[in-house]
Image (cartoon, rainbow over all chains, first blue to last red; front, side):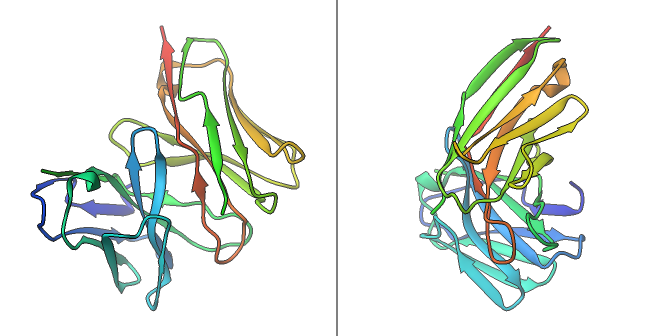
Length: 114
Length: 113
């Protein structure tokens, strides 16, 4: 979905390096999410933010941090990358509109930690 | 917290046949159940959803059924086509402010010619 963009699309890094994955959206949504996808494990929530001043941990936040720089921007950082953080990372957005909320996903960032 | 199990992990069908993917959830308070389709190289995209006050919902060739008593829901795709080949994820949440989606582990559907 062109409304949610992620940079970079692919990244190779070495163990111990700090890296940042960026997400931008033009949908005007308040809520943003970072997920990790691993084969056989589905999508697991890392962090989420319901507005610029709100940051919450998901189920697998250890080793990650986030920054919500603006309504449209939500960045994920790996402070000291390790090989088991090799995965496909997705950013998503949603707009609260009552029961149930559609999440709109970006195209993903494929990260390889050597 | 919520736990969502999804089966099968892979599914191969002939073009024109039907495909069924099943999910179970653990939290009886969950009341919103979306299904997402992920095509190769892309992010997941919502294809259909159902809320707990409804037992079935249809949209052309796809339908979702919900059994609240048994805490399971299913995706049905009829007259499958090659473009239906993708990974499908079910999810569950307690709909409303402050709640999040818990995803199943995904089903790789392959529609063979």
